[in-house]
Image 1: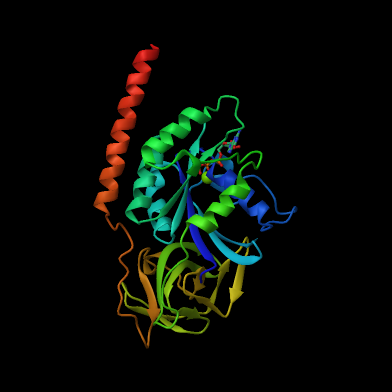
Image 2: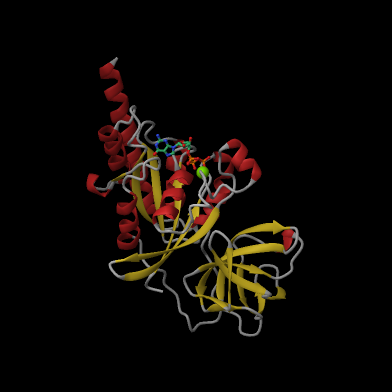
Length: 317
Ligand SMILES: Nc1nc2c(ncn2[C@@H]2O[C@H](COP(=O)(O)OP(=O)(O)OP(=O)(O)O)[C@@H](O)[C@H]2O)c(=O)[nH]1
Ligand SMILES: [Mg+2]
């Protein structure tokens, strides 16, 4: 468990989340040359047609760092405001977030609102100044904006380009060093958080979850706590580019579950999966844990940043 990192990628629309995810997948050898294509995780027809992310997409990468094996679970999220609910669910399954900011466009509305969601869930934030290859990039000024917003040091802001792959090694190192490993008790009764689900016409609903305590095993009799419905775990596994069937998915990890459920209503995002015979006594309080102190620091940083920007602009004009 100490070698697992769960993180999401958040940003304003088009700041380059899915493209940077491509580079992370390539660098870690998670895609073969044959499988490579732009914005690989945008696998819905509509996403590919429009070049935007609509659903969150989870994928697992294996990565060796200083001779140690790590499992990195990445969740790419949509940047468009209409999909913020998607983002909030993904955030709840992670310990850290890559906050991407376009070096030409700087901080925008969804940068801030997605950052709020991440801070409310107490995620470790890794700020990334992306698209530094652009001729219109303004790295110094935008780094200052990020520093002002987060109250971090400028050295913590990683300069990167999803186009050229610059900075990807530094990002992976930061994921391992700065994002905490998941906590949880592998011996406790199963407690897993549902963060997403998709409908598959052959297999019924695929439920995506993050195991908080215990483990979920193939063939286990499980219960969804909010609906009180019981099912058999017909298949469990982890999420590589293709799903990988496993005998069990353990504490701290992210995976999928197939139970033969056909109606989407039965799977509620935010619900807890537990063992039917030996249920957990914990309830998941993941969605929207409000950490007021952090939020107020952020708001005051934001106000001072906007104010300084306004002053700078009036000087220029
Ligand atoms: N020059 C340059 N272009 C980039 C870079 N990263 C992404 N782009 C381009 O920016 C556009 C948006 O990239 P995406 O990766 O789809 O952005 P996104 O943040 O995933 O977008 P949404 O999921 O729709 O919010 C695409 O045309 C990319 O080719 C970069 O580092 N440099
Ligand atoms: Mg995207």
